[in-house]
Image (cartoon, rainbow, N blue to C red; front, top):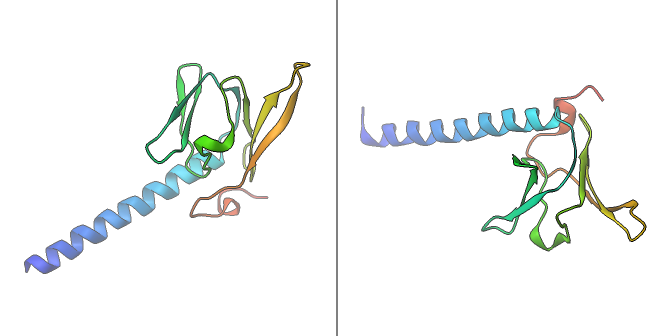
Length: 117
């Protein structure tokens, strides 16, 4: 085979792998539910937040929460199974939680592909 054909096959293989991996990660996240108090935050080089539930990292594939969204340690992160939105709640001075942020999914695949809603 020619070098040109090999490069095309390699490129198509990489694209296919990324597409399939994104599909699988989106499906897994869609069927997961989250309800925890954020114990640690990290900021990526692209200014996205990475959340921690105790020592466990919670990577989000379908939701983008930027570093300037006002999310802090101690806030609550909630997403129900097959829920379209991710919610972040803050605690007020009386110790009650109120809705701070409602995040729409930004993934490539619609949630209805994975859930019967």
